[in-house]
Image 1 (cartoon, rainbow, N blue to C red):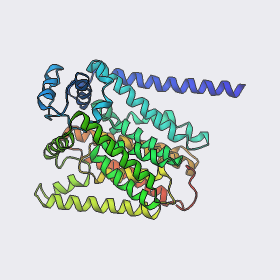
Image 2: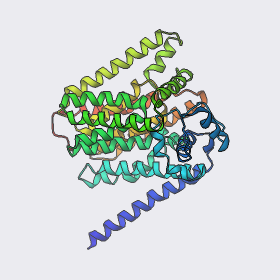
Image 3: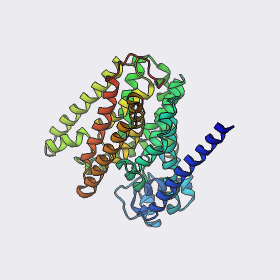
Image 4: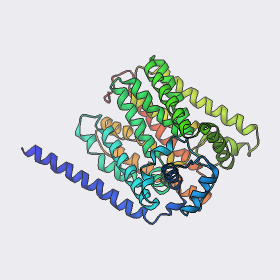
Length: 397
């Protein structure tokens, strides 16, 4: 009876603390310029579909900016895959201001849920007590701050990968592949993630997962074609326009190659492509060699940062997906050292560096420093994997 009361009290306190942090953060968000944020584009796309319009129609899309006071208009059409707009139909039912706050809540609840679910991979309460500290530290994590500020979809991308991991752990590969295919709605990051995951699937001879990804991908293509038969072609054109104006500013090898070549072509393309292929090749080799020795969670801990640093387009807010390897790093540090000290030191270093990178981005309009966030996360993942005999059964299974 006493244990039950303590458990209920613990749940109430935890939910109250998380709810309080979410409430305070959403109150801060009311001061942000949501009309000139990425979220305005997402909201507008959902609103337009509700009104029978197409966010891929240039005239209608730009007119929507005028109607709702969206002054920032870097794109002539919705610069994301058309099926993504369907997710924002519910938010399109309310005003942009209300939808922005609701999206903040959805993102924060998603992050809390991801942390909670991943920590439950450990049976000991030692790791489970980390829910509140990790969630609190995430408010000072550069990608988290920028995600909430811009209203981007990093939390949903992380949630998609989490669900796929859980399904793989339950040997439901076909459904896991279908769910994972949704990551293609963020093509610059989704494509390399699916490429590396595909290598892991091939090494495991997991044909159901490959079939699931194919089914999901084809389904998304046809869902978009119902709205606009030429949506894929229009999206490629919009993507190229975005790439042309953002070269040399991202936290990936392509940006550093562009700067090293001083923007000269084909030098920057060849160098960036070569570096990207080398990293993808090394990541694929690791996954192939250790396919039977790593869990689904551990595999994606390697896949995500390598895919991100190899892709052609990346902003700091995309790195919110690093929450998946970050929780693993923290839990593993506590498990190995039997102490919270190393875990908190890692969080402090990560928060300080990522926030410094964010400040540099704000002052220079370049996101180059966020490359270091990837190095820290990937370095810790590989270090912890290699510091233990990787052929031993993982405690996370």
